[in-house]
Image (cartoon, rainbow, N blue to C red; front, side, top):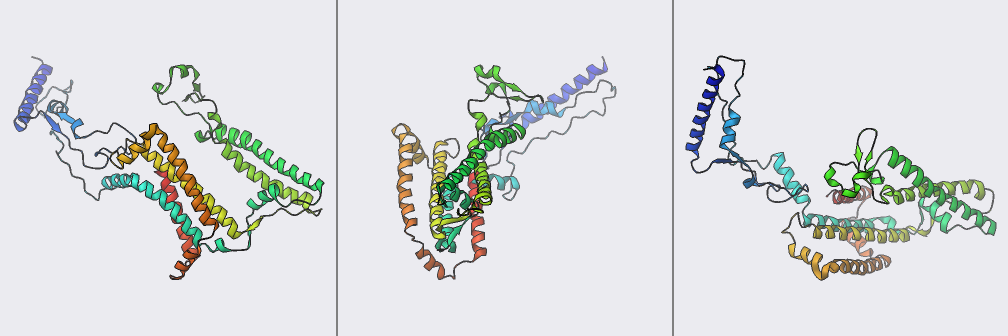
Length: 399
């Protein structure tokens, strides 16, 4: 009998002995169950976007696999088998405990609470309330001094105000305005967006094609339209207009800068040698009026954000399915889905009329009277409160 055959017989005998020992320990169950700790991830909440969340019933290690994993394969070049021993069999504990102070536990529950629908709605509502509180408390909102905003005032004056008294100078001013806007649109689209952000920096948010991760992500008619770069990476085909993503934002920012520059050139070439008014940052309105316009715009932006957040929560039936389930179901399915469209527009328009009317009539005096009882606030307190609003905005975007 060869040494190899003897070794195989010994392995078979030891494997059978271990199987009998395990069978005696667990006569009614042929598998070792691995308990998953009770965290939000194992409780059915798919916070990372994967629908294949595994529970306790999905994981088991059979005794046969455990035995096979505990026996070393015999070395073909070894003749002495007296020191051969199976490794100690390690069976995971049935119910491993995770302490409440462990990072895994705290991270899971923090993520669960941060992404909860109620938390997201309260966060969006808190942004609206906090912005109005800062507006009512800022003393500049009650100032009757002319608003002076360098840059913003230059653009406003070159387009809408500070007109010269003669027709020729009016035409020159209009020419500078057209040059500023036209050059800004052209430079922003062709140079900044296309050449720099998309082609050079390869930023996907500005139209650079996304990499192809799997051929299964492609439609059949797109398989012949792949783009292979010199580095070997494969990019998925783009739909019409996808290469121009983000172009309007970049064009707006660049146009603002070029219009400011043309206002400076106008001041140096025209206003300095004629009686034409100089273009500066002074707006034809007081700080109080400007703050009312800013508060109205702030309401429009934050109200749209709140409606977007609620609509996304209502349509997401995969995460937190038991939270506000009746309301979310009615919002998305009532009247064949038309309820959410009509309710969104009606509520937004009605509330906007009410809020903007209140801002225009200056109801902030009651807030000043209330703050006087606690000696008001100072610049440090208002800066801290503005930082708090920034944190709320960032958390709202992150979740």
